[in-house]
Length: 219
Length: 219
Image (cartoon, rainbow over all chains, first blue to last red):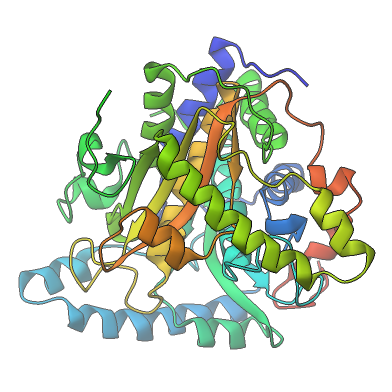
């Protein structure tokens, strides 16, 4: 296996990372099986703690199921809106935060907390590593979808216990992400919440420390 | 912004995902500032819940600090080894699981659970979304490092509270990942724990369901 990537390959990797967006506006065109297969295989190539591969991918096409998920979203979203005060609540209400019914496909990524038994290499001191592995699979899925021109939006405004019930998850399996997946007219030039002035971008230099929290560079 | 990537660009994206490895064997060559800068910027382009950007990156070069982290690893690793029974304990002991002192650099990725205040868009129903955002940053870092020929290994066999103390994290900031980062002679052709026969690869078809847990394809 070759260590290096040439300049064009590196640029493609950086481009997909830079141009990935949380998409909420979808076209209904179906995703070809071959494209979906490539995206799911890429997801499964994520790192997993102790090689435990704790993920499953529930492909949700059924509109009846999706309508129930949308209702669970609406309930949680109504509660959420009340938590933002004054003009911020109105601004919140004006944002489009999901594409559950408009997108071609929904995918629920789950984590089986019991896969390969109770003792997993790398989880002995940090038991949440399996959840983090499943998140890495989500990010792989997201990036590979982007290079296929397929948008992904992560809907986190649903109570996990309601989502688990709707997905009929057995005990020990938890939902990690509920994703809307589909083609889109345009990937926004920057994150929508940045463009909307919801929160500012944190400067690069403020996020880097040296040798400990708050540490400045010494050499 | 162009939706599509051409075939060569797509192949580069899939290649970096496929050839990313958890690296434990490092060369000590320093990582040029420009390369490190590109990798860190890519990490900060990860999706974050409500655009909250909860991450920080602590670059750990100081060997004194690293030696203490290595000691914390050794303590947790000794405890872990005892949890594996019989031949599995011996096999566990034979695996190289970190490169804390051998790698050019360590990076501790953290999550500030209070960034931008108590109410964050998208965390109202699922409060752990900020942790998941920081994990997405880790995966971006890992993939971008890979395309630069730089190896990354995630050390999870350290008690989070000990790591937090060593990194001097303030209240409300938690460690997400402790990464060994540096050049390597070779990226392994497949995950080391697969090659070592520690656990088998789960077949693709076993990980896909339709419209609910256990659901088969109907159309």
